[in-house]
Length: 393
Figure 1 (tube, rainbow, N blue to C red):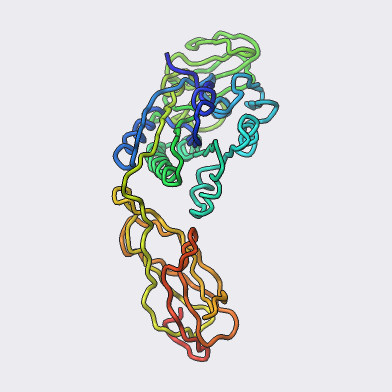
Figure 2: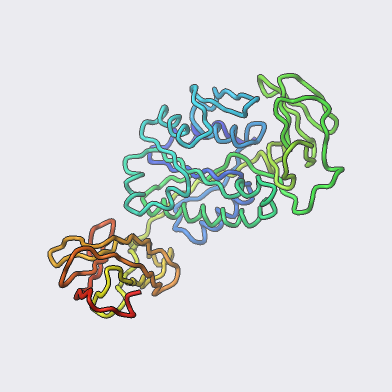
């Protein structure tokens, strides 16, 4: 018997005696989760990794699935007219509100989106997780593509992107010192590459509070041909017995979810514990691009090389740097360029422009590590704004 999705927090997060990060990817089907596990085994330094399944609530939709992964899911309240789920009186549909719900159970909790966390600088990521016991990160690639009629044909590509995204996030969290990482989803999906034919569409004869492509909800019990009616506690759900779609308003019939098929209801649960090696990871090395040692314009072009490729096997990790012009006494006198050096090829060149302010005879171009504050490379320039040069732009 599969464990229930609504017991996830109680059985895994609450019982952990160390910090926990949970990556929740919308519409991550079990088979895609299996690919993530295999890729982590090949690419990441894993101490332990397991894949099991969990059974969603019904209907297998985002609002219920996301709420079920939070604390207090046993007492959730589902409003079938709005597909709204409240926990402890809080609407659980936004990331901000989910963080509030998490903090009711564990004060040192946070919730954010995949894009926001990924695009932070390394020092910001470290600061974000500092002191946290529970971190929820929400990812939405598959559902964002598949749930729209215009883009649902790109579901396979979205699944590939999701695998890459989540494996990368797992490795990133591990490099930040998070030991216990869970990867799971709110629901799965059904997908047909070909157009859905008319005989695979069901037209229901009764009126429903909510009519989806794979489910219908009502406060009254109705029976429909080719469907199963289930008592869901306070309301009734009607679900196609097979993989047919229900006729309803809106486009998109190839990518669907909400029904009772295993592909929709069984979600992956990956438990990933990052391993440790005797070899400590190091950041990529950097070097300023060679250039004429003169500045002849307020706006000048410079370059910096990332000498090493990012490599999990060689334990070479990304580096965040800030680059600006300074007086010889250490006063910043230009705009500042922040760059994340995370290329997978060696000798990657990053070009940028800086705007110099004030009047100076000489300045120093400095590359500074954002985490440590160390000066990684520097070069002195003479300033003569009266000379024009073809190398300035």
